[in-house]
Image (cartoon, rainbow, N blue to C red):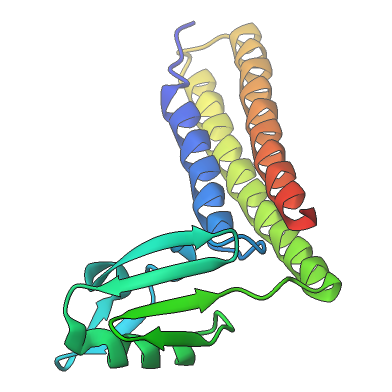
Length: 183
C-alpha cells in the first residue's frame, strides 16, 4: 500500500494560496499597494499595469503614494485610478499621486465579509473536487487490484485528514481577513 498524496497536498496548498491572493486585493481600511498595483494604465497607446510605471509606497495607514518613474505618466495614471473600481479619488501633487482611502462604513464591511465567505465557499468547492479526484484514483487502483479494500479505506481516512486540514487552513485565512475587516 504505497500511495503518493503529495500532488493532493500540493493542490491543497495552491488552493489556499489562491484564496490568500484573492483576499489580499480586498480593501480593509488599511492602505496596501496590492489595492492598486494591477490597475491598467493607458500609456503610449498600450495598457500597462501601474506597478510597471511607478513605485507604490504606503505613507500611513490610509494613504498610498504613487511615484511615477516618468513624470509624463502622471496624468494617465491619475485617469486610470479615477476610472478603476477601487472607489478612491487620486490627488496629484506635482510629480506624485496620493490616494487617501476613506474609512470603511459598516455596510461596506458587511458586504466585504459576505464576499470573503463567497470566496471561501469557492475554494471549498475546489478542495472537494480535488478530494474527489484523488478518491477516484484510489478506487481505480483498488479495481486494478493494486490496493486491497483495507488499503483503500485506510487511504480514504488519510485523504479525509488532508481535506480536513485544508479546510482548517482556508478557515484560518478567512478568520484573519475578517479580523482585518473589523479593525
